[in-house]
Image 1 (tube, one colour):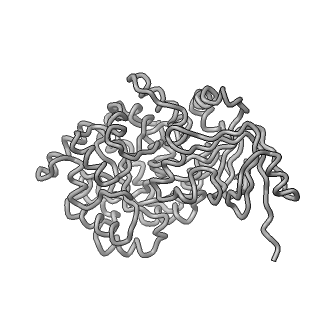
Image 2 (tube, helix red, strand yellow; image 1 turned 60 degrees about the horizontal axis):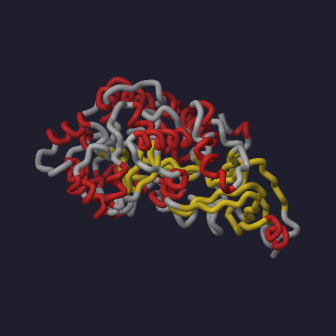
Image 3 (cartoon, helix red, strand yellow; image 1 turned 60 degrees about the vertical axis):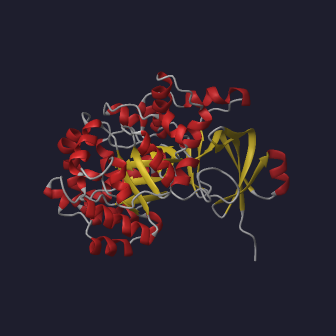
Length: 416
């Protein structure tokens, strides 16, 4: 049997390794076979090892595609359109928008645009909330482009009836739903504690544990939210404790925001091994406090970057990186380009349970990569990467020159 053909991609290659290091070749080759990275190395060594392979030359820097650890695909059409205090923003703008997704045809149209725009901006995988609607979530899974984990928002109470009536939070209906979707691409998704009763959260935790599913929810995004949780769950020691009592915290849990937290809560997240999705552009847009990055570092809590569209004004991870650098440096924290790239790629893949197959361009991983403009010298690499994250939103969303999934280029007509 003939071996599968090998395709050689020649470019400058930047590969994230961990928060403090990356590997860079000013002129290298990445060998791809059957949609996966086979090897990488110098031009001379790769051409010698694979002499009869197709050679594709890229005018730029080859990076792994971005991972967005928290967003709402059903808010993509209104990203950045509204702002204000979190709870008022939800009630006046976002929940009415999500109510429209009872229309399956609308959902199908919107999710195609979402995936296309994500790929155009260089995002190849991520974790996303859907609306409450079963059909909309099924459409998001069926139309998937890239590697996504999606969950229908569970909203039992304290929301308009046009949403709560469709929520699949009861044990029997949630179990039935889970049995009919791909568990690899589905997450248990309580919207946030105020939309659930204690018993509803326990059901979600039990099903997630029994099926080994990812869990995604919001935690401590605003002070008003925190006060509401205290009123609704007086028996709990904290907002984090609400989720912990329900069995929702663990290494396969991703908690968005985590801003208004006590030391006891940070310690709890560290003990449980839960992940934080840090959304700097969203927090800034809604006027929330700065997420205390220093606490994540102090407690050794795993985290990755996320756009949180539609509160986040852009789906571009370059924009998220821009705001990440700006927000924390203005507070006197040191943040590096190496950590930024890692948190926008490999860290998110690890949170999704995909670190063995995605997140960077090591041999054996999916050949999901993007090409960025420029070919910097090694000594100029940090400055080049920081410059890559500068510019207006619309420029950043279209900055990648090419996007490839499993070794196949996403053609320009395939994106909006």
